[in-house]
Image (cartoon, rainbow, N blue to C red; front, side, top):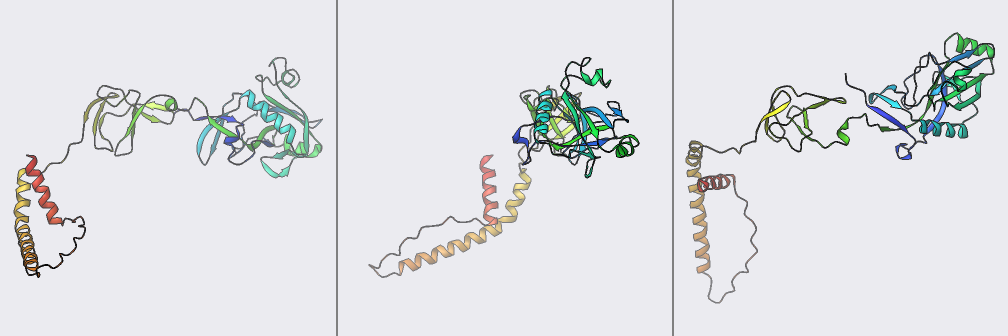
Length: 325
C-alpha cells in the first residue's frame, strides 16, 4: 500500500468553501471520531486527569503530527503547522462561545466544563505540560486544562468511560502538501491505453528506450511487460519498465481486388445515372432553342453546392484511389 495523500491544514480563506475557517468546539472522547469536517487524533497516552478537582489536561493539537482521516472522499492524512495552530488558537479564544465542550462530537451533549488554562507549548522538557502533567510535547503544541463544574458528571462520563482526550471540531481548509505525488512539479508525459491504464515517463517524450511507469496512489510502479494500444491507435511494447518498440497506426488502404469488385458492382448504377443526366441536359437544350428571339434570358440563379449521392461518393473514392496509384 502506498503512502496516503497528506494535506496541510490552512487558514487561507480561498479554501473555506463558503464557511468561516477555525475551531468551533472541542469534544471529550476516548476514541476520537473521524469527522467529515473536523479533525481528531488518538490521545489515549497523552492525557492527565484529576478526579478530585474534576480536571482534564491534554494536548489539543500537535504540530507536524500526521492525523489519519477517512470520509466520503477516501483515506488521507492531515497535518497542522505551528503557525496554523497558533492562528487557530487565537481565533478560537477570541470568538469562542460560553459552552465549547461536548461528548463524542454530539453537539447536544454539552459537557459542563470550561477552559481553566490554555497555552502554546515551548521547550518540551521545561514546559508546564511536562513539568506539571508529565506530557512531553513538541514546541508549538496547543494544550488545554479544562475544569468541570459537576463532579458527579465528570466521574460518570469522563473517568468511568475514559473520555479524557480532546478532539476539535470546525471547518478547516486543506492544501496538498509536497508529499502528494511529485507529478505536480515534475515535468512528465503520459498516455492512456484503450483499457484505461495511464502510462507516464519523466522523459521529454514517449520513445524507444525511455523508462515508463504508472501510479499506484502516491507511488510509481512498473508497467507490466506486454503490448499496449494507446487511445490514438499507437501500439507500445514494454519490457522491464522500458519502451522497446512503438508502432504508429497505419492508414487503411483497399487492395486491388476490393477496388475492382466495387467498380464492377457500381458500374451499371453509374451508367444509368449518367444516361438520365444526359437526357435531362438534352431536354434543357431543346427548351432553350425554342425560346422566341429577343426574349429575356432567365436570370441566372446562384447555384448551390450539389450534395453527392452515396453512389457518386463511391465513384469519387474509386477515382481518387486509381489516381493515387
